[in-house]
Length: 262
Image (cartoon, rainbow, N blue to C red; front, side, top):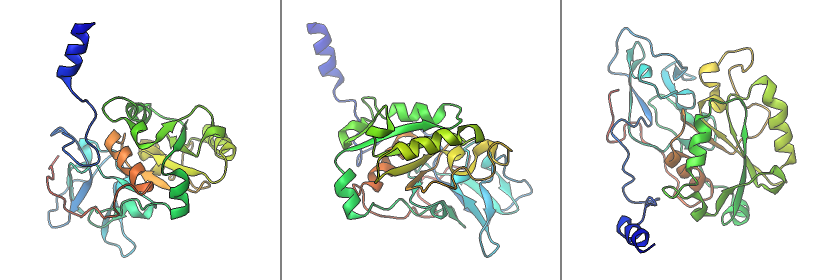
């Protein structure tokens, strides 16, 4: 027993100093995608709907549809796409994840009355609406000693009747819509809805399928969109804390420092 205690003391704290401090993301990490329209090529980005068009016809990026795969970091007629190491990928609106350069409008804090209600104790129910399991694995990781979601007063519960909101992952397939809608209705008002991952936000790799369509959530109001495939636990933490007003409002610039070219 003494050896175990001695080892534990030597190991020190394992919880990341978040927010603030060095989170130590690896070099291979793919964060916010950006578009350089001054560098063009002959290839088309694939296999997602990341590159799209803005209302005025200019090339744009839809971060909500990004799969964060190497094939998307290519040069095409619209410009060159590259990935930065910025993990901040959440927004309060679907439109906030779309821009001509790749910059996104980060999530805004809830109204003061909602922050008073949810800010110190937020209970969430996870709903898997047709997923590969990647997003759920990252949600589970939030509970470990490294990320320790509970230190912010946020926990997952087993029943929507005990929850303040629901976290939806997966492609929101036709067979799962009744389950999602029933869970939403069973959650007491006022309630929050958090859409996690490319599948929930934009259909992911299943976009256009007869079982999914082009947009995953259309009938349920969403309070927070967290992009990623899957989102890193820090991306999830960042979005949740912004929603609860524990991080200052800001906008991710179109060319953050530390951009990777692949």
